[in-house]
Length: 134
Image 1: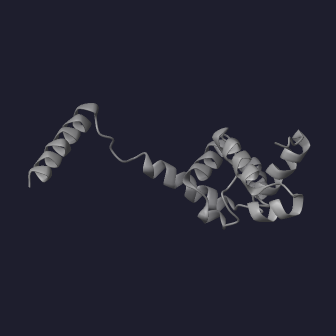
Image 2: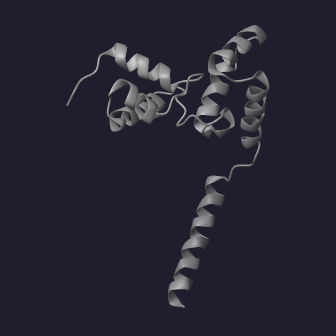
Image 3: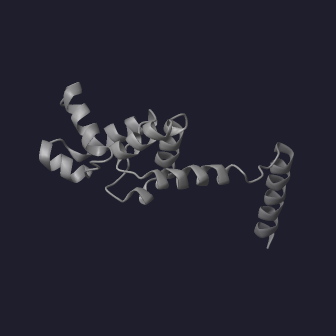
């Protein structure tokens, strides 16, 4: 197994990250690194909380996790810092605002209590038994 220097990994991370967002296939071809290796690196970076979108898609095609990470990272920024952060990622402040609102809306929905969840599971189990009996 070939080992790559931190400089090579940093270059790959930069190529995968906004605003560049090159595809794994393109990076693999350009640098001669196997695509599976690049996918593993990307997965590791994403698990560490870094914003490494899964493709070259437009920003609205980013995963919910990437959007949420960007919203969290920008939460304490003033307007000037927010604009700079958006430019760095190839985003617009309006997109960031929509994503922030979506995160807020998602958390506004009521969450089931443990008792309610157990009751639903109990009903589901009863339904499954009934279905098997039929």
